[in-house]
Image 1: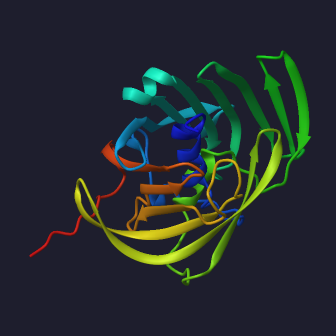
Image 2: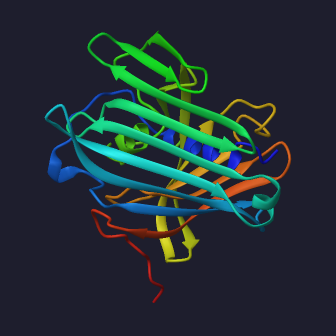
Image 3: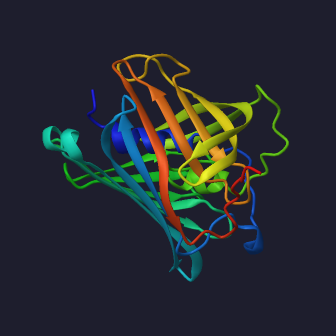
Length: 266
């Protein structure tokens, strides 16, 4: 049951925030910057160390346009790593001004199950080109104008104004993944102060509406907390699985664009 979970579930959980409205974000309002680096500890059933995931931001130039390069990596460790080795690498390139993705890379090795794909997004012709290096194929698929990949959508979210959300309100996302457009919904549950290794942190609490079945225990099995500050960092994720549970906690960070607000008890 651990197969594919430590890294893919982490990113599936944090990316379902993105709204469909397209915006151009002023440079001085960006919630992240070049050099930002986040590290998460994955735990299975609250006590067994499942692995670690990291995600970092780099500034690049593509066709004379400023862009961001996001690099996400994940691996299993400890006892789980002995029985099931995971080495995953996800990368996204998106334009700095519009936050629209133009390239997505997925290279994974999960207990011998491998994928090596590259997706190029053509927003003018509304077309995605998928190169499958494992099977040596190239195929094109139609996309919508508000499409995101699983990494770019996280950073698109972080530049949205979430302060106007009401409890119970849902946000929708169009995500291109596994050769098709996936529609997800996210429900806002309210504000919550949680305990972390850094101290108490004020967060926005969300619940993705996921498909119940082989992996997830029910449609509302995943809960995500993001910092209620200008960074909007996913700080905690919990998911009830068909067998056991999975949790991700932020354990280290550097290069934030804004102060990381911590509540200190008097």
